Amino acid sequence: MTKGTIYRIEQVLEKLFQYMHQRKITDCGKLKREDIDGFIKTLTGYAIKTLSVSMYSLKTFLKYLYEQKIVTEDLCKYVPKIKHVKRRSIPSTWTETETIKILESIDRGNPCGKRDYAILLLITRLGLRQSDVINLEFNDLDWEKSTISFNQKKTKELLTLPLLEDVGNAIIDYLKNGRPISDLPFVFMKHYHPFEQMTDIYLILEKYLWFSGVGKKADRQNGPHSLRHSLAGRLLEKDTPVEVISSILGHSSINVTNEYLKIDLKSLAECALDPEEVLCNASE
Image (cartoon, rainbow, N blue to C red; front, side, top):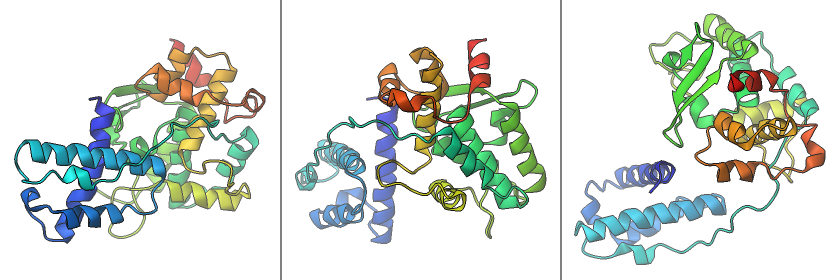
């Protein structure tokens, strides 16, 4: 079982345990069919892929409970089978013009704007995942070496990237002039009381899609992950080896990177901001 699979199972179990806590179920051995049915109903509305992964994770856990004789009934039989066909469509990308419009629509004169600008630069310039931006800590930034290094939330693997000048300047501006006072180790914070670690970036991007006039489109993904697709496309357009792209994006295997590269060649020249500095540093 890969680290990524274990991580996904942990995410589903966290939701299950929260559900059990709400129902005041303190012992996994007391789980019954109605509890499983109730939990599954809380996942209504999720994408098919997410549901497929969730059901697999739930079955894995319930199988463990039964094999270890923690429960007397095999509850796996109550978990529905959800068939998910692997994505074959071209990954969503933003053109360079659209990306610039999104970034320029951010009001960097206020604390939230400084934070949002730094966050979106980390994704558009370095291709960080939403989960890694949210969990970025001060210790992950090496200002002397101009690098950013962290254990990826999804793969658990260490990833080290160059801290590009514009990205670094945006982070410094936020830390000096925008970040709420807090003892938490996370770089990015919520800007309302109580000041806590951020939990979502999707709404941030959605806001600037509206402000910029770019808008959400029905025929493409509109979340932060689409910005990673755009970076991958730009790297590919520069004839960057797949191995290098995989390394920059922190993929667990070349096969994952190949999925990213299913991008219409006509759109490659219009993909996200030019990552030349990333390439230069990656090749050193």
